[in-house]
Length: 325
Image (cartoon, rainbow, N blue to C red):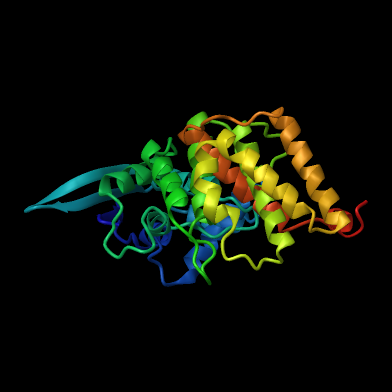
């Protein structure tokens, strides 16, 4: 992050407030504060019914005014990228909302650091790329004030997912929980509703979301039919184009899936055929010709969530796979 942050609370000893904010930056070596923040995240997600002692401990100074300034070098000068002034308790509550918006797995209550967000916005193969300070400033202000994230955050993440590639031993470069969570947060805040939930949502009939889920099913069929021995899957070959132009790609993927299903057991074939049928029925047999940026985000999250569902099958699903009934 090509920006220096200066922050302090208006009191004689502001170490507690600064330690809490440092934890959100990923700069706390002491895990105690991070554990307390995790307790607050769990508390907030449960409807504010548990773990009050932990919350009250961090909110004990909620009337203190807190300042944050983002500074960046520019030739021979220092540029002020942003300045924040607010009530510490309100700021903390907004940061907790920011964390819950980013969360794509309800079991995860660990913070996603601002530094962790920055890492996902650059190529993992580059040692020189840096996130523009203007973008990081906009992200931080959105988190601090509980407002809409910048459109450039969504476009950057989508571009990275379509461009980056997984590597042997590193299967989560292209798409991981942080990147999927960023997309979820951007879309939900933009449209001011929980359009994207934390897990695959069968009630979500958005065509782009359904296409992403269908792509995950096709990929799983291919992997099951080859026992995971392929060096290159449809994700490597078709993900970016399917994400942008579904109508031109999915007929080809459907033919490949039919060929792969012939190699599966009867139970697996029935299981996957049922899933494909449910999704295609909701699509009414038509794939969108093109997807705009927001819909590409929905496609990616749909793929991510269906992929998680396929690898965490329930006992009923496992019985259907095994016995075909």
